[in-house]
Amino acid sequence: MTATDTVNPAGATAPAAQVGAPTRHTVAPRSALKARGEQITLTMVIMIPLAALAAAVPLLWDRWISPRDVIIAVAMYAITGHGVTVGFHRYFTHRGFRTSRPVRVALAIAGSMAIEGPVIRWVADHRRHHAFSDRDGDPHSPWRYGPGFRALTKGLWHAHIGWLFDVEQTDQRRYAPDLLDDADIVRVSRLFGLWATLSLAAPALVGGLWGGSFEAAVQAFFWASLVRVCVLHHVTWSTNSICHVAGKHPYRSRDRSGNVWPLAILSMGESWHNLHHAEPTLARHGVRPWQVDSSFYLIKAMETLHLVHEVRWPDPQRLQAKALPK
Image (cartoon, rainbow, N blue to C red; front, side):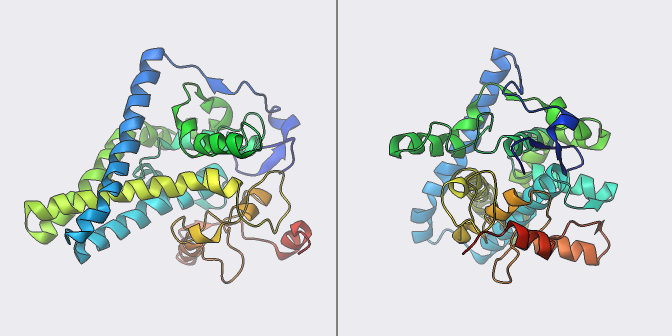
C-alpha cells in the first residue's frame, strides 16, 4: 500500500485521488457525557477480565478448573476470535472474499462476541489504520511519540490500550460507508450490547448444564468468559503494538509491520503481519507451510463448502516482487 493509497469500501486499495485523500481530521465528535460513559465501560471491560486472569494462577493451584472449562473456553475463543480475524478483519475490512447474507451476519455476530466493539466502529478504525499506518493519523501506532526507549514505551502503551480511550472516534461515514449502507450490519452493530452479554452468559449456561451445578456455571464463567475475553483482547491488541515494533520483515511495506511467530496460534494467523500490510486484501497471511494461520484454514474450508467465493489468495509472482533480499 503506497503512501497515497487508502482502503475503499470494496476492500481493495485504490488511489486516494479517487476516493478522497486521507487527512488528519478523520474523527467524529461525541458528547462529553457519552464519551465519559464509554470510557468507564471500556475500563471495566479491560480491567475485570485482566483481574480474572491475574487470579487464574492461584486458582489453578487450587485445581478450580476442569477439562470441561478448558473445552468451553477454547471453543468460545475459537468462535469469537475467528469472528474477528475472518469476519471483522479479512472480510468486512479488506473484502478478502465474498459470501452470502446469512454467513455475513453470522460473521458479524461472532466478531461482536469478542467484545472488541461494534463491527462498524472496528472496521472504520482498522481502515484508517491502514490509510495512515505508522504515520500521523494512525489511531494506534506505537511510533506515535517517536523512537527511543521512553518514547517507544509510551507509544507501545498507546498502541496496545491507550488509543481505546481517545475521546474522538474515526469517522464511520468516511471509512465504512458500505457497512453503514448495509441494514443487516447496522442492526448487528446496534445490538452490540446483546452480543457481548450473550458472549459472557453462554459459557456459564453451558458449564452449568454440563456440570449440573451452580459451581460449574461459575467456573465456566470465570475461565470461558472473563479469562477468555482477557486473553483474546490482549492478543488482538498485541497485533497493534508488538507486531509494529518487533518481528521479521520479509516483504516490502510502507510501515514497520513485522511477523511475530510466537503469537501465530493465539492470534489465529494475524501476527504474520508484515505480509498483511504488504498485501492487505489477501485472505491468507501465513503463506509458508510452517506459518500457522488458522483463519486461512477456516476460509479455505468455507470455500470448499461453497460458503465463500472469489477468495483473494496470494499470487506467487506478486509475493516474489514484494520480497526483500534475505
